[in-house]
Amino acid sequence: MQLHFSKILFYILIIAFIFTACENESSNNDNDKMLDDQENIKVRIPKFDGKAAKEFVAKQVSFGTRVTGSEGHQKCKNWLVSQFKSFGAEVVEQDFSATTFNNVKLNATNIIARYNPNIKERIILSAHYDTRPFADKDPDPLRQSDPILGADDAGSGVGVLLEIAKLLQSNPIPMGLDIVLFDAEDYGDSESNNPDSWGLGSQYWSKNPHVKRENVKYGILLDMVGAKDAKFYKEGYSMQVAERLNNKIWSLAAGMKKDNFFINETGGSITDDHYFVIKNFRLPMVDIINMPSENFGFGPHWHTHGDNMDVIDVKTLEAVGQVVTAVIYKESNKEFL
Ligand SMILES: [Zn+2]
Image: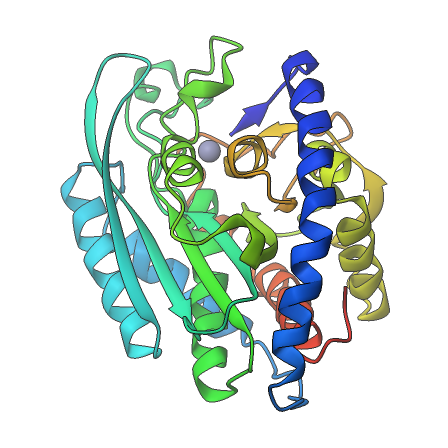
């Protein structure tokens, strides 16, 4: 992902988005009526295990670099599919091909793990599972063309979502939920200001979604959620289309004493998978992403060989995992948004 400065097109899309969102109010009411027929089960919020999430990150890193199309990526993909199946999800592998900014043809796969696929109203949780093919921000110029290990970017988000999948199996909820792991997010061109070189998997999914737009209430994207002392500001695009959801998540985090991680201020606008989901699928989607420095950079390990297990901290994974788990279970209990 990268900071995105060209916003004019996006503002036009936001206006179209608002019209679509208004239309969805009425169909949501229909969904509510359907859900009223179901039993109103309250499920206690389970405890999120940060250590287990860290082990899921370490397992991904053990496959080596996971650039789309590489051996490490293939092995990691197979492992992710089998993990989600073992956690009781119905798994869809959405294969697609895409051409990168430097004309590499990729055969890629978005992984979709579905809970309660028969329930209409759903939320979506996302992360990307590929790693960057270049360490273009590495201080050593001789190693800048080598791929990165990507423990934080984006093993961390996937690790949190695997642990949540495990909780969904042991603490089932009467709500539809899809975990969508996007492929080929991080093959982007950091030299150009063209957002379309990033997020190839989310671009494909958002134009070929596995669900109808009117059945999805909102989405949450996790990206770089594992580094020690991470700072999560409310991301700019998320605030444009999902201000209320952002504010709810951040105030929930404050109530859980996680406001040392979840900073109650708006940060930069990031070209990340949610940008394409908002633009093409018109879903309100929040990006929880580490922007630790005052100018909202992504931290010294970003797109370098320093993005390895040494930067991963259980406390950060646990803070994000516990807040997102609380969102899900509160939403299922109709106590959130
Ligand atoms: Zn990245």
